[in-house]
Length: 325
Image 1 (cartoon, rainbow, N blue to C red):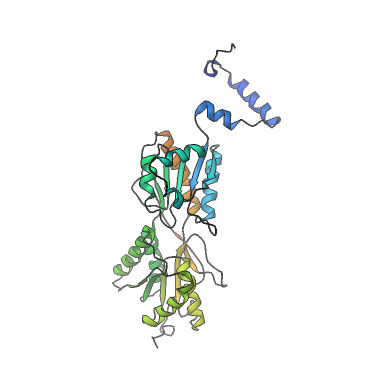
Image 2: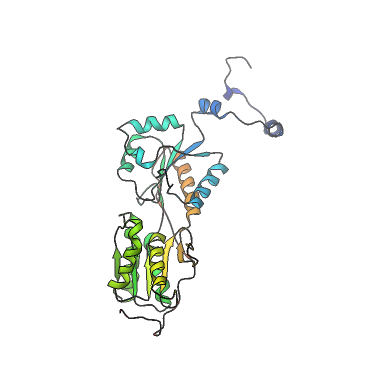
């Protein structure tokens, strides 16, 4: 081959190709990603944008596992971007595309736990890269749990046990669609059974949640069961109930929605589990699909929640219902 020949003019038989690859593996050869990127214009790398600060990273580990394993099986790497969601929101118009070029990624997955105020429009309008949204609810390019179904299933689980006085509590309400939808699912299940909802929703700083949880038992005719938005609401309520001498679940049933079963005080809180591992897998698949279709929008994927695990739910009985003192 003369110096002016190009790679596309070279042809090898399948047999020769297999033999070359086999010998390459034996000697531990690894392709030079930088050279390949220069030739193809692709980095074989996906950027993950998350909410983070110096104390926490707001994304479930099983989701990362599903995401990274699916990317790896397609010879892609996942880079957790140093810039957080909040830092990206501060960039001036046009700067986001330049930042992403410097990071050498072929696409972007944005984690929306806790919300992404003002960021979606910026990323969609300012970059040609395919973007997929985790835990955001829009008609296209999103993968998220069916939170309305989750609120309904959690409530129906208690209704099927015979509970009729079922309250709903969210002590960390932030306006995220998941909170709105879970509450709607709870109300829908209660209405279908001809029951009145009892709702306690407020955004409360973490140190004050135990105090407010005490007020729930004082302000309501004590329910026989409570559905909570998530573990951050369930734990202070469980703690207060135990401190007040209320037997769980004999005198009060408690169910929540989340990615794992909370058991930090020795009791596994009954939890309708989100299949976040599957969420990661579906997000990676969606990103590949967007890339193959030149970035065209892809209909969003809604994931059902069907598995309940934990120890804090039981049928009520007349002897277990305590009246407000």
